[in-house]
Length: 200
Image: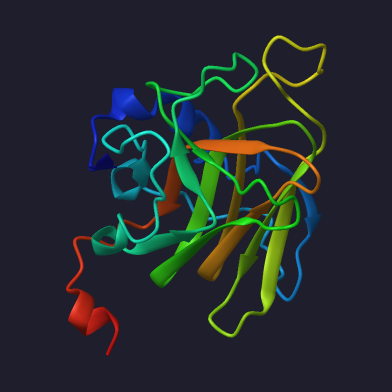
């Protein structure tokens, strides 16, 4: 499902995180970008949240949301039965590839300035943002596993995010582990797009 310009109450958790401009993920590096001490406040209404609820279980997500400005690689839709991987909302998540060294990758048809998702994983996860030339802009870290019904110090569904201008591609890497994402979020809203115009 694509949600944009939603009522404020649907974004309570998001508004608590984003307007303060503090990354919930632990920053690893701010490469090639010097961030100001205060980031600009982002309008709640301009965020896009993809909750995946309208997609079939085990369906590769691919280009399903291309008209909204983003495609995904190496990920399938999952309605988890394992309580270690609870959804953040609804019943559906995005599952990373079983091959441990391959990331979940989101590619934006136009640059965005914020990307994030609610992450649950069996090992640490690194979110990386890249510009249109493939240059690393910034990273953020889920520092340890946060499975449900475990003794982790972190609860499931940790909001891992980055705010930096010029993001064209983002990856979520969980080496030698399993990761699910829910309520994938980016800013600003891009869609609906004319795909012919966006690819010209």
